[in-house]
Image (cartoon, rainbow, N blue to C red; front, side):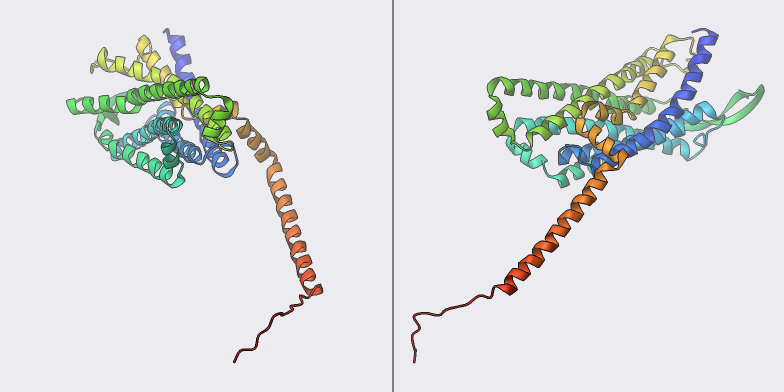
Length: 362
């Protein structure tokens, strides 16, 4: 890239990351509200998984996009270039990244098991079990992220700021063997393995649905899945498929470029900020795509779910609340009048008891 192109690319990132924060954080929080407190036609387990995904994506946007990338492009000396924030921020970033990736993986596997067997459907339909699964995923993700706090170290670096040479502390990568091993493990845990599992189980879900449509009639499938749950199951799988495809498409480029950087360009003399090198540009574009993955679920739900769009319109116009209040008042009024009429009928029609066939006992 030439000098003008490099300047445009840097400016684009300076605008892109704050914009992701401004749009992504409210969108994820509003998605959590819509999924948890509105009737969007999802199953109970899907509500738990997707609401948990919205929360961890919000934390990812805060830790990675807001506090790391936005401050990097807009400030000279972000606060995390000092101890202990240098290590803490890495721990929090990878904890939220692991959580987001593996919630999608576990949700995909759970949907496949529900389709595969009736026993799994009964076991995984419990909301309490799903909440425990999500809690375990988040806790384990942060536990595995503890070593990520050790791969960076604060060291003084000579920099030129506004034409002046100065020495500033910088949170830099610790170039040791164990740091390289930890980074490779983190790369596969956050990208490689989840991507492969999501692709495999989405293929199995599609294969199972196609096989069921060929083996059974429409009426038989309705009896197998249930009349009331069939629509909810279909909507949940459709939403899951959309989220999974977005996860793979937006995460795979970053995994590929990171592997290339860690193999061919894993050298201390390599300047990662030199955008005249194509792999640096490709790596930053891949990072932009992966970070976009944490802010797009609200848009995906709007695109693929008619019930979600319907509830969104009602929430924005407050029609649903007015309808619920009117229904509640009408129902309460009807109950009051029915009780009054019932009492009146009891008092106006006394019951006469006639005893027959009485026998005297001694």
